[in-house]
Image 1: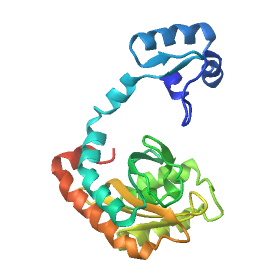
Image 2: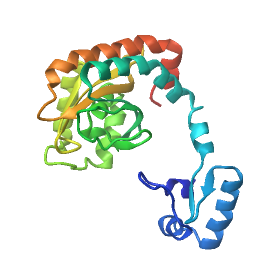
Image 3: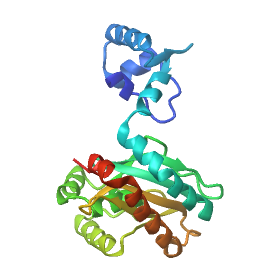
Image 4: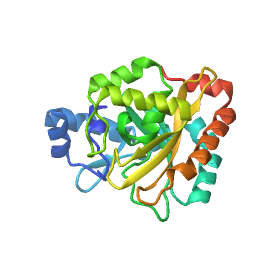
Length: 243
């Protein structure tokens, strides 16, 4: 797992030396472990080194929560995409970060620095704030304890201000982000709730900050999130509830 975790976004392949440098694993040990991973088709050999294998992708598609969420969310995300032609996301909370489990890339918007399986801090993203607003208090406490990183001049890094914003999100049912995670980008997100009112996922629309009318698209995002909550049903929502 340490070797696999050494791969970062954009790494098509890594050499043995790069893997050893990133992980601290001795060369001989890394060589032996990689041979086992190749045998299991978890990684594949290349001319320079190794790359992640198809078996990893196949296993990822079997994860029940992500698969169920993606399948249920697909029509709602497609509707939002067709109506706005902006980038839409589906994300879940994992620790103090959000993980993107589905994405449709807009045709006229900015290049959003998100990817399937990618992570972003929860405190400065629209989906993250929507998730935190409808999560148990200990989730916010963990995020604050981990440190509120300033990613742009607009990032909220004061715990009190973040807490007050989350309270407003609970009142409105939607979260709005203006250039808090990435300069030039705005986002509107809404939580997908279980029967107890806790967020199990969030979906969003993202576009240029100077062009995206957050007030206009917010009702559509909110409606899609409510529809997805109903579509998931009690059984999947129980499995998806934060732990």
